[in-house]
Length: 141
Image 1 (tube, rainbow, N blue to C red):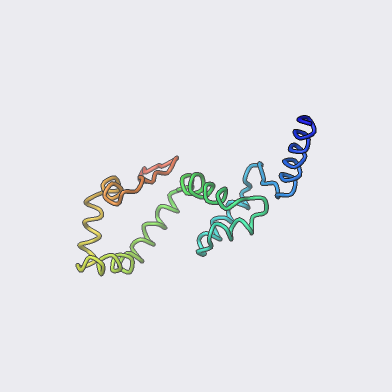
Image 2: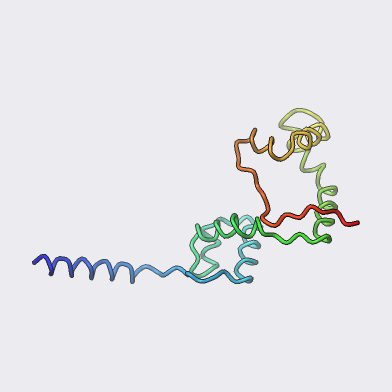
């Protein structure tokens, strides 16, 4: 009877796992990474992103994005220069939102941000410090 019960349990477990869709255990492709970035950049939620990436769970999509894509972005000199130009272009708009909350001029808020630095800002906000894994801060000569 115990053997029959054990076999019945094993059959139920096997049929349950067969009924649920298997998640991919394969490496992420560059196309999947690009789609993950594109969809997240458009404001899509992880659950919805996973529906567009067959075999990938919402958690898998989020972890891939946060632990790999964000931290391993390629930063050649052209992209660094573009970042600097984009920051200069959008900083007033970005900092005005922060300054409005603080009831102060945006340049004062921006200056304090730079003065505190990334480590102290993260500590004060009680968030982990974000670091790129292959950060190169060399300035072209």
